[in-house]
Each structure stands twice: as C-alpha cells, then as structure tokens.
Amino acid sequence: MHLLSDLTLDDLADAEQVVVDVDLRDMNSVGQLKHALDRVPAIKARTFLVDEGASERVLRVQANALGATRHMVRKYALNALRREYSVTGRAPRTPAAEAALRADAGGASIVEAERSLEALFESMLSDAPMSLQAVSQAAAGVLASVRAVGADAWLASVRQHHEGTFQHCLLVTGVAAGFARGAKLGGGQAAALMNAALLHDVGKAVIPRHILDKPGKLTPEEFEAVKLHPGAGFDYLRKHGNVSPLVLDAVRHHHEALDGSGYPDRLKGEQIGPLTRILTVCDIFAALVESRPYKETRTPREAINMLVDMSISSKVDYAAVRTLGTSFGVPLPPEFGDVVRGFTVTRPHG
Ligand SMILES: [Fe+2]
Ligand SMILES: [Fe+2]
Image 1 (spheres, helix red, strand yellow):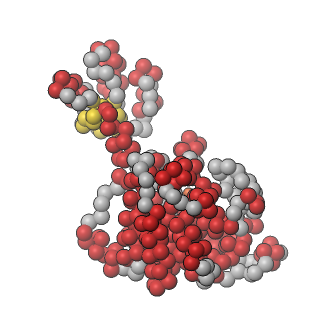
Image 2 (tube, protein in one colour):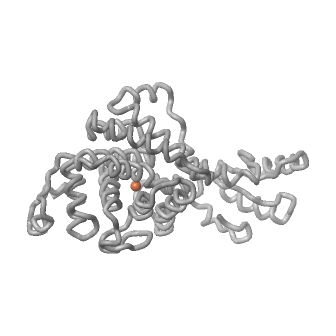
Image 3 (cartoon, protein in one colour):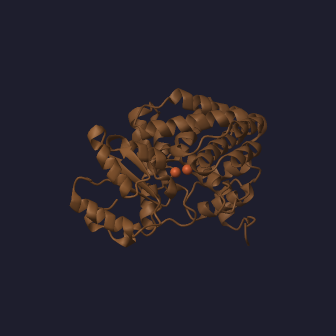
C-alpha cells in the first residue's frame, strides 16, 4: 500500500492491478492520481473504492474517466479484497471435474475434506467460529479412506485434482492418515493427528494467494508474511475452534526445528511435543511429494531420504521419519545411531 503523495513509478513497476482509495472531491489528489496512472497505462485492472449513495454517482463517473475497471463500496472493500486475494477466492470446480474426482480412489473423502477446508478458510477470513465437528468428521473420513485404498492412491487422486494450498493441506491430511495407519495409532491419537493435519495451515487464509503460489524463491518480505501463518492459525483456532491444547500446539509449532532454527517461537528439542514432531514430518513429506508446475515432484523414497538428512542435521525427529518411512514402504534402521554411522540411503540426485 502506498500513499499517493509518496508514490513512485518503481512502486507500480510489478503491479498487475491497482486499488485506488482517493477522495475524488479533492482536485489536488485527483491531479496526482491522474499523473501517476497516466504513466502506467499497462495496468489495466483498476479498482476504485467509492461510497454508497446517489450523491456518489458523479464520483463514479469521475473514477471511470480515470480508467476505473470496477468500483467497490469502501466499507465492504477490505473483506472483499481479502477474499479475492485469499486461497478461498479460487474458481469453483466444474460438475464434470467434480464427478471425475468422486470417481477416483478416495474421491468422496477428498471432496468432504475439501469442503471442510473451504469452510475453515472462509470462517477464518471472516473471524467467525469454525465447526470442529465437521473437521473431525472429514478427517475421520480421510483416515478410513486411506485405510481402504492405501495412502499412495489417495495422494495420487489429490495431486490429480487439486493445486496450491488446497492440494498441500489435503496431502498433509492424507500423509498423516498414512502415518496413523503405519504406526497403528489408537483412536484418540489418530484423531488428534488427523485434526491437526487438516487444520495446520488454516492461517494461510490471511496470506495473499500470489505469495503462497509464487513460483520460485520468496523475497525476504514475502517470507516474513508467510511466517505469520502458524501464529495466525493458532490465534484463530484458540478463539473460535474449541480445539484441544495438543492440536493447537501442533498448529502453532509445525514449522519449528529441533535445533531451534524454526519459527515462530524458535523452540528447541524437548520443547517440541510428539504430535508436533509427527505433524512436521508429514508436512515436509507432503510438500516434497506435491505436484506443482515449477517444482520437481519427489517420490516417497526421495522425500524420506531428504527427511533422513534433515534428522541428521538435527531439524526433525528421526523416530517420526522412520515411522513415516515404514508407512510409505521405505524401511529405515530402528536406531538413529545406525543412520548417522553410515547407513546409506539412496540419494535423489547423487
Ligand atoms: Fe505451514
Ligand atoms: Fe503445511
């Protein structure tokens, strides 16, 4: 966001769209605005914020003269723009694509989990309560489905039909189900892990989609914005979610590292609980096997090997990596010492 009086051409260099919030009754501001917009004719999408009411019509006409491509009522604009720039703003699936998804392995449970995620992101954006019951039901559905069709087939269906943040959140949920199944977790433990997986990135609802979906490296400022998501999700769920302290803790700390180099609280070692450690390895594994146009999709074996490397460099918990490896057909030695002492893993690229 830039003040009109301080605006430079550089500020607009990469802009695809401008949102103009200027008092069009102030001729001085209008002059400055016209000067600025005349110098960036390539920016075709120009949203002007206006007030409601008949007396404002003349200002809408004036906005059009300045190249407005749409008007937005000022008092609703913040929420509307947030929605537009959030993961919730994606286009709905066509009926044919929905039918194809339902016909694939685990399709019904994927649709239900997707609906639950949609509702969750929407509720977070409007700061409204979420339904823990709906989340738990969807999460239990994923667990049952992964038990029935196998984690690999379930994950393949998600990769086929989803992209971006939705794909990621669904994959983490499917990977967690694979873990729960492989580790033979009991009802309560499995439910906590599944809920934590489905909820873990709800904070991404408030991170602009163009940052979340950016191909390639984030700028330091963009990374700072992304780093807000675990805290934002935790704050929202604590306020509105009726979520257990264990699951809340996992949501807040799923980007911590055992050596203290993670975020947001730079926790270390024993400060990071067992559920969080498991969620973290599921999250990283899911990110590695994700399908993105600009990123290589790793096989489960490659992903596990990379996690083994991360456990050797004291980032993630080896026991959790080992259980995940077993769950995805990549057995590892029981003792971490054996890994460090030269157990050779198949390296992804030599
Ligand atoms: Fe995350
Ligand atoms: Fe994540």
